[in-house]
Length: 162
Image: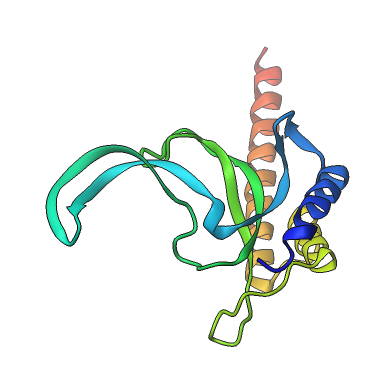
């Protein structure tokens, strides 16, 4: 794992710059994909060598990043509504960036503090939105403002009646 010696330094810098959700979970961190697991509820095939034995349903600890090979991953601590039946916890780290090349081969990139700092800064400070995202943000703002106007009108109407 190229960059293994830097991961401690980078995670300390991220904690220093962006802080913690609680004493055990900083908001952003860097991890190596093959070292991460998560607890999931699901159906799992059980094999004896190459022979299928049975299918079991239950909770199992499984590799978290099975889909991306051996790469560094920048994660953000995220809190979800408790509706996901497959994952056992609604507070968890979610990937925001995989450090791999965009050459179609997804070659692992070395861990670099300046790269991680830019990725996290962009995630924590989304000041420049893509056009489609900006349209969605404008739409949501307009909806919120119209709700506030409607609420204000209802309050005024109530005051006039009393």
